[in-house]
Every structure is written in structure tokens, then in C-alpha cells.
Length: 75
Image 1 (cartoon, rainbow, N blue to C red):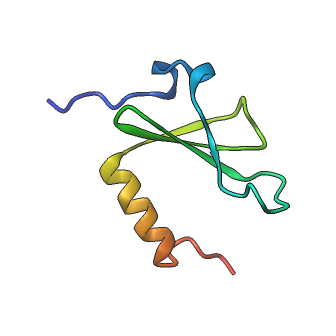
Image 2 (image 1 turned 180 degrees about the vertical axis):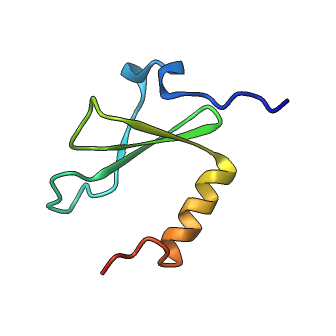
């Protein structure tokens, strides 16, 4: 049986430091990430109470590779 993947509610979100993807840009809803224990959390920075995605390290690496490879371009 595979171990259960953590959920965002498993962490004390009030003590997490979020890194803003657009700190120097004029973007109303930037992506924010937080590196906590052995997972990466990601949320919409314009919606602090919104959904939080939880990535394992291999999932994060695959996501970043997809971004860099243009997998999510929509123009």
C-alpha cells in the first residue's frame, strides 16, 4: 500500500513562508509556493484562503519540467 500524500490541512499554514512568483511584477494574482518538510505547496497569491496544491518532490520536478518545456503555454 502506498503512503498517503499529505494535504494542505496537515500543515500549520499560519507559520508558512510563501514565495511570490511575481514580487517585482504588476500581476494581480501571482502564484505563490512554499517549501515545507518534504513537499511543495502552491496557491494563487490573490486568494490567500483559496485552494492549495500539494506536490511531492518528483511531482514538482515534473511540473517544473513541463513549464520549462512549454507544456502549459496557451497562446
